[in-house]
Image (tube, rainbow, N blue to C red):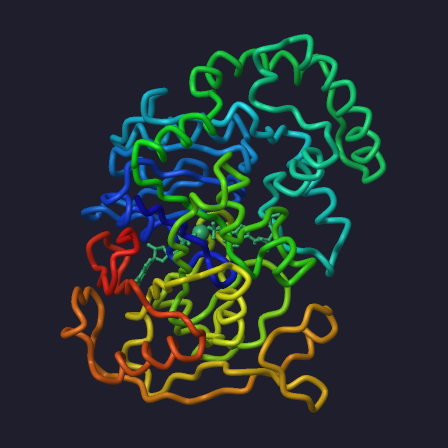
Length: 429
Ligand code: GDP
Ligand code: IMO
Ligand code: MG
């Protein structure tokens, strides 16, 4: 039975939440495999808006949600989010949500270090969400992370906190930030333990069994390929791998289980935070896209930078992310533009490139080469079939397919769940 992995193909906020929610009706289990509460996934169901950061978007469909080992979990943020969505009528219990016992935790000292380092960077700041994501992944790789399973062993917790604090308090003090005491952290973790542990289990076992039983698994990526720690615009990236291969390592399934890889891309481009953005528009058209697309960070509230669709970057994301089909979202935001540009390459120091080089200097110097396409006057908002789309919009989609070397398998035309055109069922074998 086919599974599907959804990943972002630009710099995040492409509409992964909407697409995952829509696809979840065809799935049995929805699994997060990387990132943390830096993600902000928005679902609009019959006018009600849900903003999810850590919880898998399948919960809005009543599907089993799983948080895999590749996710970094802030227990305070998790419990707050569970409380929030319960208030909106969603059911979140240990029957509907399972959490990997071997996932690493985000503690308050991670957020403090994240923020202290960002302010020390000054103008060179990355523009992180300040939620401790980077420091938590650093601790995981450095083998000093506290994991979900440690909450069941007070002695382990106590010993690990000694090691963590030795490291973090030294850094925090050096940065002039407030330090932490072991007693307070330990007491709080022991208080949180009985609230978190009922959700914890070896999720790899459940997922492998589900796969064997022919259940359909939908993997929900966070962030996007251009924020991938290896393949993105480093150092202006997040601290996890966001490509589809992580769906396997971040859950405890083999790579064969990942299934069809669906890349999500906006019909234009946005970015939160700092870093190169060759097709960025700082003129009125950029403002128009931002206003019409409501481009404000779900997590940060910051205005997103906007620009033209960069086919060079999405093509690169298709290759390194293993994308087999594209879900193109927010086509409606382009309605009424007389002409639309698409980035098809870069000029860097007089040379033409069909990829973004890795070196920061070259990335900053990349001047986009554009192709200009005809716009359309008609509204595409809410369109639910190809027949509802103006000819110029269809032409735009077809040209994107050619340039990025991947077929468009889904089209989204509004924030609402059902305003979606399916070209090919990603779950079809
Ligand atoms: P994610 O992080 O990839 O899940 O994306 P976000 O939820 O952070 O941001 C996408 C925003 O676009 C959300 O506000 C969605 O409700 C909205 N959205 C998704 N698809 C469409 C679409 O096709 N048209 C419009 N106008 N808005 C959309
Ligand atoms: P979703 O899943 C957009 C960006 C931050 C910053 C960089 C590193 O909603 O698409 P971090 O806090 O992860 O260390 O910040 O990555 N970033 C996102 N941008 N959407 C996201 O998630 C993001 N998660 C992180 O703005 O530039
Ligand atoms: Mg988002």
